[in-house]
Length: 114
Length: 114
Image (cartoon, rainbow over all chains, first blue to last red; front, side):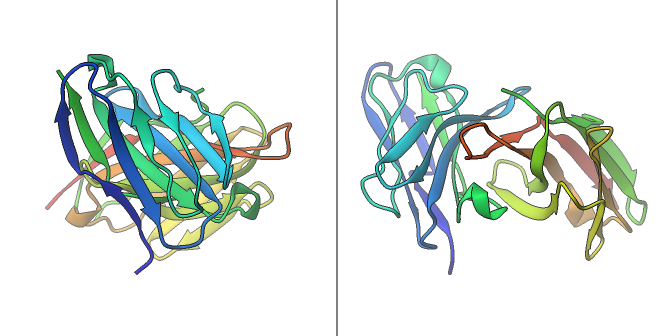
């Protein structure tokens, strides 16, 4: 089944403790992206990747890191999480925005930083 | 940066009625997409309309695009309780680098009562 898999689904952590949210897609998609969703603010893009080893900042990249060593994986790293990073996070992928192709989303990771 | 803005923010209707949601945007686009999100879950792609198209249908969904007014509408006909969800428009911008970016609005929350 074609899908984007994020883990974990829920995560509660403390300020400053490094964490990684994994994202994997099985559709051989070139484009991958991370979004955060907050009430009243909608979805905001954190980072995106057009292909392996190519990553770019989105609208709200501060406090986050990503890597794209393989086509299928695009982990989101919070080196020193803070309470303002408490949010619902989504990973998404597509063939590539050149192709007028839709995004496929994972089921989300609800992160709470205390 | 936020590009698309949905209107209304919330809509409550009875089963069987039609639901219309609007999206306005600011700059030139390659395409405009509509997504649906059930509470706390990942977004699901509904329909994509290219900048040179004016209307598109998919089942009970009808999307129009008016590039002169920089606006789009999503019509759901004969709504069902299962249509209760948030609906987002996303604009695929024509970037200067040759790559395009997808930007989401804040969504319309639709409640369909039995």
